[in-house]
Length: 437
Image (cartoon, rainbow, N blue to C red; front, side, top):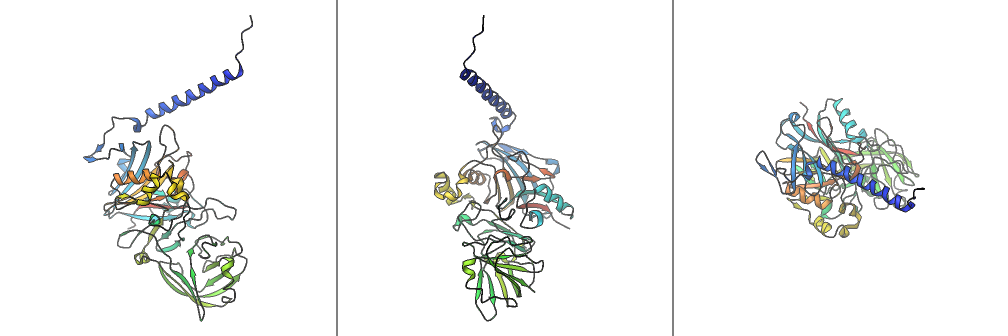
């Protein structure tokens, strides 16, 4: 007797069903291991009441916490694991700091590698989260260029214009997303304006739009410093090299200069002892006869708000999440319309891994939200973050680059679980570190 063969579609459906069942079983087993799915978890710890949106809070590496530092994992009831490193603002042994990946604009670096580099210089990082947005790679070779502000040890490394594009800060209050610390410890969160200008002796004044950014029709005059890299990587820009001026650039800056080279094709070499001014080709027509080799003048920068002129450490995100303890008003509309109120930032309406920085009167918070991991953590929308952070008592917060870049390094290693299972190279780092003695 010959056994009857099943039709091919029936066997195919049976195999697919078995695969789906296997995936569901594995997901369920993994879920059982995670506190986020346990309804019996406590909502308080050490007498501190946690919001109802928190199922559980875990202490991570508790025995290694220095005075004034804490590291927690929050299990959010919506289905995400949120890692937060906290620094007491009054801690005399700790301070906020930033670090540029690869020690220059071009090129990226993992937080692990950057912290190892810092420790070789006798600096002790305690926690760091990936910061600004930028270009990972492009045909120009500009991989590593950040879209946001960066001030490191008083040096003005990067400052963009406001643009209503994902990764940039829009020109509305939602884009007030540059965080800085003054020498006396005051925390600032603003939109920062460059107010840069090039005064040509006995001639006109050329306004400067940005520092170490893309030179384009929307940002036609850009100043490139040695921190950018070896070349400007522009195309068809009118460029001239300035020397005999003081470096580095700062938030309050004024120096004489002399033009030593003129380049009408772009992609100039940036000298280690000078800067390059790039002018977009259409605007450059008005300046080709005004600037030549040996032209002299004065370069001036005066950041506003004026408190920013003395900032030693600063880093920018793209969108404000919390203002004065409440969800940012534009973010409320964004959440209600599921991103339709600001289509340029619609990525923020979906659940993804996220990174952020926040603070209140007592603490600074560096935050990473895990996501894209079924059975463990699916991530958050920007509205989810704003609501959750305000519930935790965070007074002000900004969004950083997220996705697979979302990484919180703390106490010697990566604390969270990056989306792709490995640590991605990033642009810069917002950091808590031990003060140097």
